[in-house]
Image (cartoon, rainbow, N blue to C red; front, side, top):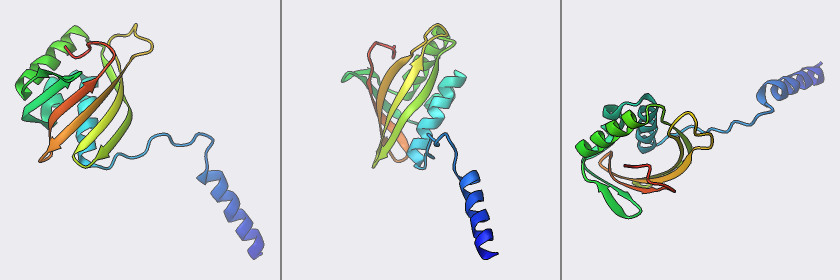
Length: 145
């Protein structure tokens, strides 16, 4: 009887505990990563005010090592204009890594509905006191206007 119960429990564990599709997303645990996740949610909601919430007032944004934006107000204006120019823009995090005071994100961005493949972007966010103080952007085209 004990053998039968053990076999039944083992079968149930196998049946309910395993799935054909492995879980591809792991939980994002770091507080800095949560700020980046919120930022991407704001992109998908086209909400510039929510987008800049985790950025320091003196944030700097660099694209290909050239400073493009110098503070949070300019960043919010930039994102507002971008959302108006691209009302169907959406972003999806592909990879997110948190190391010390940096979060490295690979995301895919679609500017409009006709964009089938999207554009790959890598961003390195540097944090100070829980806020993003610097962003370094690597991208194939000038998506960050």
